Length: 80
Image (tube, rainbow, N blue to C red):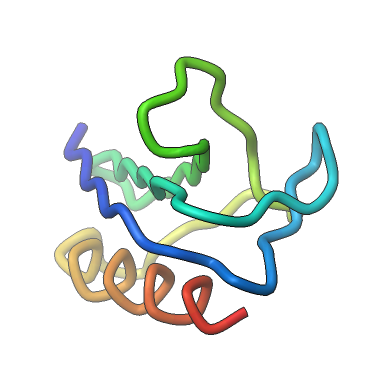
């Protein structure tokens, strides 16, 4: 399973399933299995407790797209 991580600042916040909106300096972590199952996690930068983003199961048609999707998500969440 491949993991990617990016730290960014979300001034308007990011919705999480567990605690609602979080904002400030956040870390996005994505992991992708060989069959394309994509898992998303977000936390305050440096914190130990991870939250999930709302939604159902995420799956990539091609796991090689993981890096592109990760960077795209980080940029979109940064603008949110």
